Image 1 (cartoon, rainbow, N blue to C red):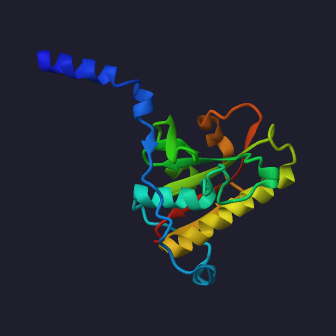
Image 2 (cartoon, rainbow, N blue to C red):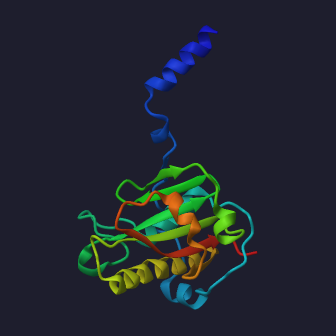
Image 3 (cartoon, one colour):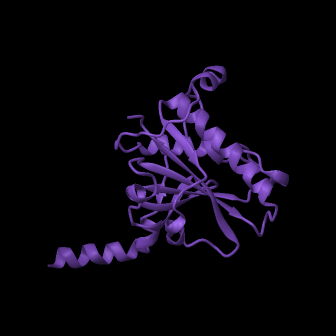
Length: 196
């Protein structure tokens, strides 16, 4: 009984449980991959996935390629109009719903609920593109900026043996679970997984 009490005390002293549920991603591997021209040749849309989960190293590499910090001044792998960086990436995994924090290279937990099957069938990972329309009110520029990020994901997937597809038409009923700030809107989603 004393051991249990000590364990519980140590757990509470370690900090709030919510923070403990965030995922610190491993450093992205910036040296791997295939040559660009080969990735372009292999880039394609895949809509059928196995249920195999994606390793956290691969999740880290993919998110960094998508829109990670690649310079000391905080600029990113995907451009945005006037460097407003108005696109946030949310990630749906079997372990929950997360927001990608590019500066800290981590996933911030929004919810522990697994909604992957509800959103994109069997894809084990879905990237959700959220635009902050307060930062960038021109919707057409938000859409272009989403396009840069999605192409980065397509090229990474081609290089890593993953499949992906961008979806503009999808059931938006899940978006309430993202707890988005006012002025934010989901533009697209992108399924990712190992091809079936």
